[in-house]
Length: 471
Image 1 (tube, rainbow, N blue to C red):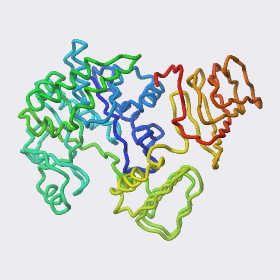
Image 2: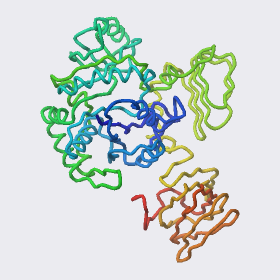
Image 3: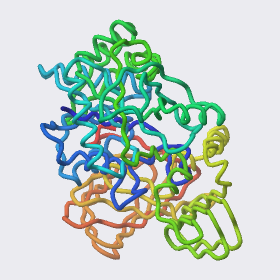
Image 4: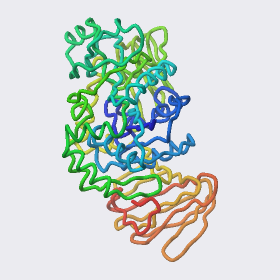
């Protein structure tokens, strides 16, 4: 059984903590581990498990690789999507990668941003699902609902979960869209509707066979994208033209709603998709006033609030049913009953072309990170951290000059034809138009302060001549 981890979401409903360049699956929201790492960790102890395939957006490739390295997990492959095309193409590409190896393994498809609290129950459900998948069924996991929810799709089975004497797979009768509250209440009361988890288990060949019947054009383009892929270490770079030609579609729409091989296995294991701040609050520890606080927070005379500080002191007094999220460059204040609508703020930011939807003030790169700490009309000050053994590209700027001061560590600097070594408190100046490179050849982080000056200080003012990261 090969885990296929889908890590392509943007998590916009968890803004401002989740950003397009660093979405929720890479964040430690419910523990000290990221949600991607938790997804892989909960598979520990599952029998006959092979190396995982991770499908992610190309811009997140080094985040995935670094988090897998930190877990000492060697992937089967990391498949890079040029653009998101929903779950059906992502899973099809993973199935093709499995079949290319001459295998017809089971594929355990898991989103990278879910919480499952009862690992033992999850493993027991996997064992039941495995039996059906080995018999050629397309298994989906239906969450036993704890309340009527309008934020989830539902799966109708032909048998109520109360009637199941033991855990078993039963045929799917219908997939239904997110309902209104009255409909959701009727679903839960009936006993034969499950929340749609978006998790699946099936043989690679069975999924491809069904996709060929239900969406042959999609499969054909997926084959073109995969056959035209280039391989770079663990990365599989899909053919861009073929992949972006694929019509975006989910597994549910493309296959599961149309096949006669779909079965659902009930999962009752404390599942949550962390799709909003209120959902995150539901799986967090609360105080006596039903508040959840994280970070440097003072809260008094307040009830049913989620307050999170990432950067500075946040004080809340006399508030109820509020979500308050503080980051270095943005603060969100929202009523808990509007938590599902945070996406509207992100859409406004996109229309206004504001960078706050894309990046945090600290921006992560494959070589380390940088943080803007001050700026004016013709200057920008950054704190740059270069990881041990890492190197920035050999580059040039057409509109700005740079002054580097080493704070900690040792920097190897290429400056035109000159190569030098700078230590703490030493500095250098890079004029406009000069080729330069910053490297850290030591085993400790390198920290520098960079002062940029010029008429244009945008991140797109970079001409790269050589880059170990293939950018």
